[in-house]
Image: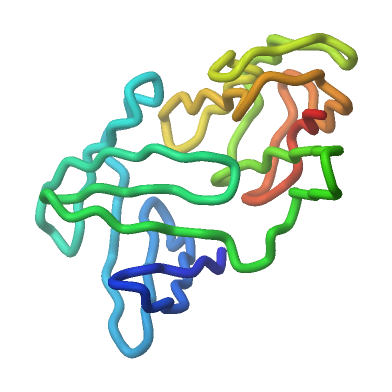
Length: 162
């Protein structure tokens, strides 16, 4: 997954590659291995193993950016491609994609259903963790691309909100 990383008004390319049960994070010539040990999606908290060092991280996001705080330092990540997100004047549609490969454990909404920001739309199981996919804002489920029991790939479109 290709992202950009912003720090002190400068933008850097960042590449995340799944390698078994961890990720290889590449920024320029530097790279680190990151393993997700524990996820508390409700509170946006993670416990990670970064190059063998155990750290806690907090993640918050809007539709375009993610703020990741590790060891008191906050980093802003944005997707390079903008894939799955369309904006046209006041008409706003958002696609939510799978953050990693996994199994759709449950689907909590139907097409045409009104949802509120933060509402759990579906639950994925990945690397023995539950990942709750939540509505980024109030809206209506325009399209469901998955069903319970389906296996999904990283960045596969899951649901579209309008």
